[in-house]
Amino acid sequence: MTEKEANKCTPIWMPEETGKVLVALPYRAGLPKEEVLEFYSKWAEDGKYEKDMGSEDYKGPLIAANAVAEYFRDSIPQTNVLDVASGTGMVGKQLQDRGFKHLDALEPAAGMLEQARKKNIYTNLYCESLDGNRLPIDDDTYDCCVTSGGMGEGHIPLRGLHELIRLTKPRGLICIMMKESHLSQCLEYRDGLEQLMKDLEDAGKWERLSRDVVSEYVFGENGVIFRFRVC
Image (cartoon, rainbow, N blue to C red; front, side):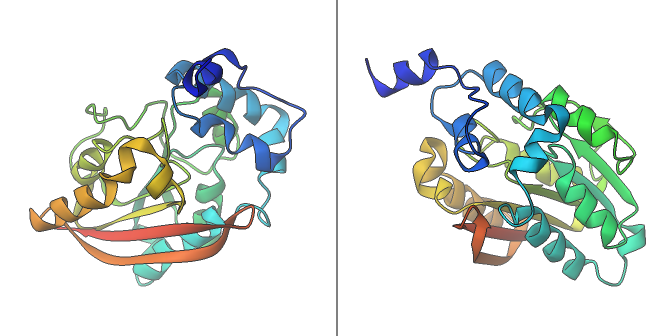
């Protein structure tokens, strides 16, 4: 049996596993989208996801929120933000704690989104995937689109970047926080993600403000955070 076949045959949900193991499971190659979404929804039940992904183990939301707050430091209360792949609202909570008042959530796993809804952080909650198809949101709606943990194998595809740009106002910020190893391990990203980022910059769609590797992003592994200003 090939590794791809094994991935399809092995149940994705293994509740006895630790958060460190669980966080890797939905990023395995070849998993059907429906199975991944079911996994996340189940993981979110009874607060398990947030217990497993405590702030000491998963610093992505903190790092991403700090990066966004730094960019909008003089206009935080007026800034409209879309939290992409919002999960249960961990990034949104960090942003709210920093004074952001206009927050929307985009999350394809219904169980995750329901947990986020309970926090009363977001104005609008969209149960949608950032898969390159046009979302039910107008052009230039947000001052900022931010994601932490949404990039990886079987998650946000390269074509999703075009939709982020469409949703973000000129001079607005797109902030992408992800595990550094996904740049080389994700089949689609390996030769395509940073090249597409450069191509979009060359085409005048956005300009890169920063690309920073950060330590201790998730369970001791490095992350990388990109910040782009939309043109």
